[in-house]
Length: 240
Image 1 (tube, rainbow, N blue to C red):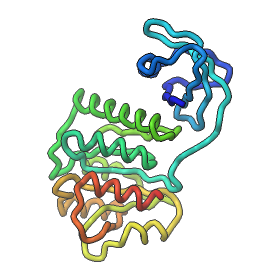
Image 2 (image 1 turned 90 degrees about the horizontal axis):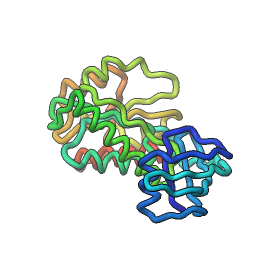
Image 3 (image 1 turned 180 degrees about the vertical axis):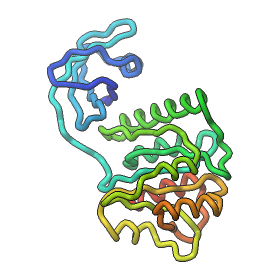
């Protein structure tokens, strides 16, 4: 059954006009009045809905029963990463969403090639958020991970509070003594924040700054992975 995200709060029994993006998608699929679809608003669970009317550019639906089903990862993982270039960030947001990431923090780092600020940065974040929404529609998640505003790594680290109870922080690193992500996951319950560098990795000073903010060095093994591969591998290891 087709699934669509609604940016408005849903309630059983309501009749509503779908947001423009969802309405266009319904029309592209050539759905008709009487057809059933699934809607979710990101607040948890999903709703059965029935198309009532198809206009030239608008679609009205009747919202039916709520199903509280959730398809989230067993452990929340927040991903902070030096942004990879070109379309790799789109791919990373899509796959991270499918794998259950709780939030994504794009960062500008010393070795990163992507530099965004102002309106360009806002447009990119909005685009990545739309990628996350589309991935949720495809994979069955009912909670959309937030793509946070782009920040310089140093500013983001400086603003972090002390780790709270049940929160664990790790940084992907080739440092001697780095523990495996699997061992890190098994040591404690709670949520994880994992920091991953861009192409070329984090600079030594950036890594030291992260360690001072409570991040522990983590390793994915001896192979050198692409930036987007490393972030996804860490997400799978920590969140599964």
